[in-house]
Picture 1 (cartoon, rainbow, N blue to C red):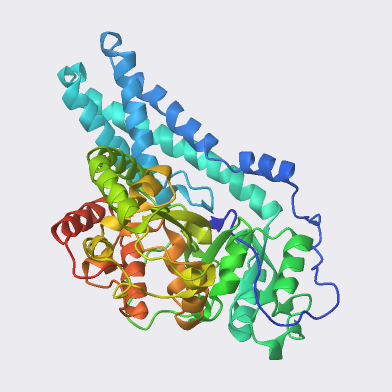
Picture 2: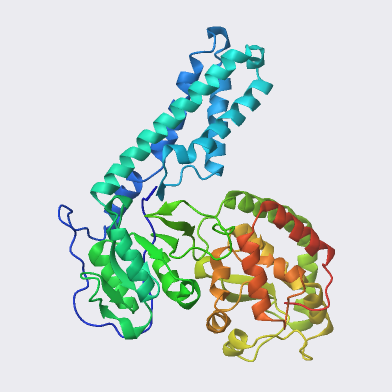
Amino acid sequence: MTAESTLASAAGQQRAPEGALSVPAPTGLAPRRRPSAGRAARRARRTSPALLWLADVGAVLPAVLPVPAPHRYPLVFALLVLGVLGLNRRASLYETCVVPGVLDELPAVCGRIGVGWAVVVALSPLRSLPVTVLVVAVAAHCGAACAGRAAVHGHRRRALRRRPAPALVVGPADTARRVAAALLRQPDCGVRPVGLVDGDPEVSGDADDEPGLPVLSTAPDARRALIQNGVETVLVVGPATRVEQAALLRELAGHGCVLWELEADPAPYGPGGRRERAGHLAGFSRRLLVPGGGRRRGGLGKRVLDVVLSGSLLLPAAPVLLVCALTLRVMDGPGVVFRQERIGKDGRPFTMLKFRTHRPASAHEAATRWSVANDQDMSRFCQFLRRTSLDELLQLWNVFRGDMSLVGPRPERPYFVAKFSQAHPGYPARHRMRTGITGLAQIHGLRGDTSIEDRCRYDNAYIDNWSLWQDVCILLRTAAQFVRPTGS
């Protein structure tokens, strides 16, 4: 199994040493430059899953041959193809960041073809066919699919061997050197290290024991190496890297490449633990990292749930919103709707809507004052709005627009995001997913003046174990706890 493409970008805060950082390409390899927007688009097309889709569509043709002519219903086989494609996509069989072997994905491919045939046969006239005919048809379908996908993977694998993807190795210098040396000894793995990234300024500069591989410790260094070598892959090694160099990894991910975590040393708690893996690279177990909330499986289902529920709730909520707005206008004057910048998915700011229950003395106070839940200057009606969370109802519009989700980590102001990110290493990871009106932390009572560390832990646990059913459960528990003693 080889890596096709990966994430790259740089971060750090120290001073950048002078001097060129480019690494000469090995003999026989042309130097690669960071592609322009047009070249990047062309490369994206070359690494698109189109060939895999085509192989799976074409694989149904040999399956049609054993079926007698009277039973070759075009609509039935079209539905079979669509079903198999959907199942394969759900199983991430069209990801282009890895190049698996045919045996690696054979169980997944054949299993989904078998499920597709079972459903189609049960619901169509094909159920009248003899079992032997169906078995031959399914076997032909599986064989053609595996052969087609093997041809596509083989082409991509040969291309990578001729032109390995340049990579940065991020982690403690000693571990990064060891991993880089192992990768250089295995040129067929499809990855060629061009630099080591370590946040310790004591080890920055050229590494004498690894000629040609500079050790970088600053964001400018890493960016320069990224551009000069056309880096598309970042390999993260070392047990403390994800915590100590979280800012670096977020910036690397922001450059649109793929980020892998390599396990340089076997886990001490059994055979590989229970973490998800994506095979190995030159013998190092690896898994795909998606910092900042990269696309997650089931994201479409979550968005559909958000649009359907928020749209359907906005209509019955309209009279309540109108009554709250009119009451606020009469009691507290103009300026009923409060707009405030919050940080959402991938660290992008958006404008969050709420009913105004407090009038800060200045914009600075609005951006930096933590909580006004028990402010005695608020009217009783405003305190009621906050206690019942009715002031948050306008965020249904944020959900409908796509700024937020119904379920997710609560969004925070830029000032506090920066502050909490420094104090709690896992806090930035909350932005891997859209922020939400409610979440796992909120249904466990973590609202208002409660522990940020606890909230962060619950938010990341929610993202790591996300499922559509979990969202439904959180929404039901939120509805049961709708009247709360405090607001957020």
